[in-house]
Image 1: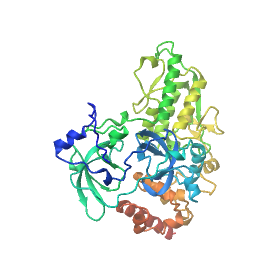
Image 2: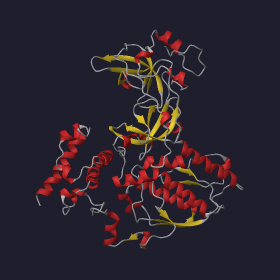
Image 3: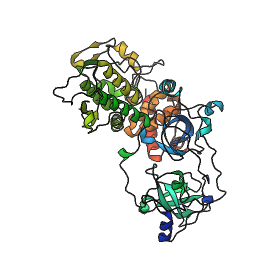
Image 4: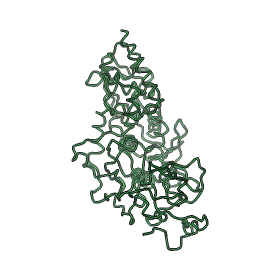
Length: 500
């Protein structure tokens, strides 16, 4: 069965028939692909959760949320991560399955690679954000098609392929070469230079027969396409609904145009609740003492929000990504209907359009939504001062015993702000996986993801001293450069310990 379209294409559609004649080429037969001849229906809903393999750690099953859908494709985001690592899967992919399957198999769901916090924090996050779903129904998952017995592709054949650098796009492509023996194809995206060629397995789910996109209602990107700005790509439907709700509320309350010089807003005071482990997944606790004021206000509520947003950006692991999350939550607009809503300009010149705030309750509702959006606990910012004294310049005063309680865990960890390598009194073999992760993170700021991997593998001080370059490369999948750096610092740490 051929998937080549028979009807005349619409003006904005890619015309495969004309293109094949023009290029004097042939379409790869549908039997060459690991794809269903009749593409399955997509019965999933945006916002539902499922189990999926972590693309960066294929030994792990994690929980993912459906962020978007396009034909039989799903855009997934691993719970506990942000939108930088979203990926796409087909509804009949073997990489996804119904929530609860892992538990039935006697195995365990694990935090995704890149989850910045401790295993204890993952348990809290799972209980709050994952446990109650909503979950995709078992009937939505389709059986994966059979893999072709062998590589039947020929050089020069045309197909449709996912652009690896922009996986939300599917492009016309050509089989450029075939690697004997290892089932690999080299694919070129038509209209692009050879620098964009990529190698892929002949049974990959990211290549499709000619006409597949049209048959499932997906727009095939034209040859030599100009990439759309990422900001124009579809956002999380739930975030958009929240924005729409805020905009609707703002429009309903509008009575006069907003003028920052004349319009007044409720006066509020907000306190940073440093007591407890409530900073969420996106804020770096090591930056709190430097950038997080103890008190915001008293001031007009929109100005207090601005100060909170600025402080959180400075305290975030990834300020740029954190700013984009704020822009998704409070998108700036030129709509005159929203002119009575306050617009704030952050220190990094980002403009945010806040919903209308007529009462203090409106303010706290917005702050509550913000804390949820940044995956923080609901008591990160509170209206009543926590039990501490405010000193000069609103800096908190904490005695030594209080500091120990803030920066230590039940296992009597060292203070989290102390560099592992520079703390001579700390016993090497007593280091917890959290200490080891912090040690890796301090080697190089680029090692944040590696630190999470060490934490996921539960590498403590005893395991740390046993690591070798070979172990890091073969068993943890690290490249040679990072492996050598890590082993170098481990040896320095061992030398300091042994010299005591």
